[in-house]
Image (cartoon, rainbow, N blue to C red; front, top):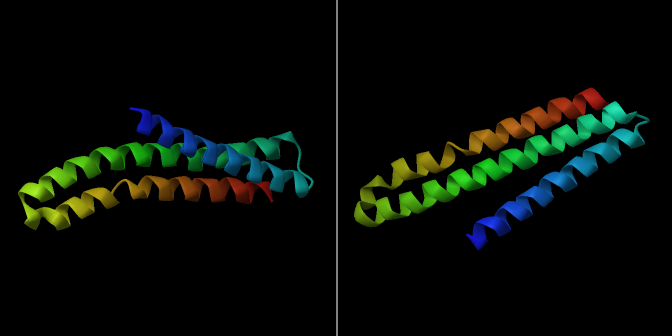
Length: 104
């Protein structure tokens, strides 16, 4: 349980720092508070998506390792299941870049 808390803490800090970076970029371009909030939203989109992907891949990875131990020929299927949650973080990046585009 403590490992999960550490991972969530690190990912949360990543989201906060990313949101601060986006907000600073908005302020540097002469934006107002709305631009800063768009930056915070973009950072949260990446951070929260990262937390979700980390949790999902943790469960899938542990179950997949057990499956591969019993049936080594299932490696390809387990690999596909591990890649599926990565689309969530890609969507988070896309949303963040759309929000960042609205700032500039």
